[in-house]
Length: 169
Image 1 (cartoon, rainbow, N blue to C red):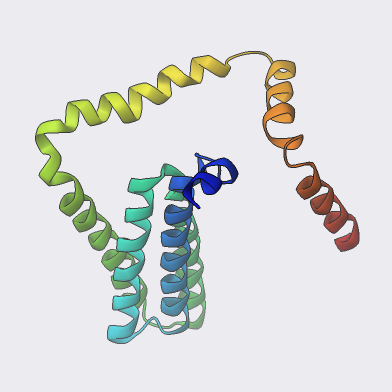
Image 2 (image 1 turned 180 degrees about the horizontal axis):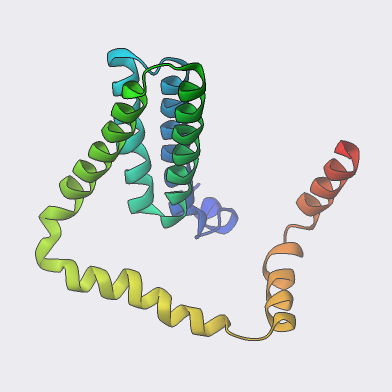
């Protein structure tokens, strides 16, 4: 079975799956906070958001979009509470709880590896900076790469997506 999965399951999705699962779990916690921002349940939901999304970011940086969504949720909640003349403290405490949980998660995960931080930087940051130069070609070259590497191997999926787009419009 493992040899079949290695052929059918793309390598780049090995990190995407767990990271996206953590992001969705964190966003679900944020939605729980949105429905009940007051009290312990709201604080625990934001703590869960902070831990889940931070773990997702540590797996795959793409999960940083969860923080953007949380910032929009907090800004909307602040505007709504100010307009209704409701207390702002639960919203501020919720944001602070998410921030504290994120900071604690980063420290808990990365602090044990403090002696290896230079190697971590070399592998995570410098590698991506060097890889950026690999696809520094013009637009036509990059479009050919996208077509050959994604669109053609996934032609059926792309056709279904286009059909869905036309049906939805």
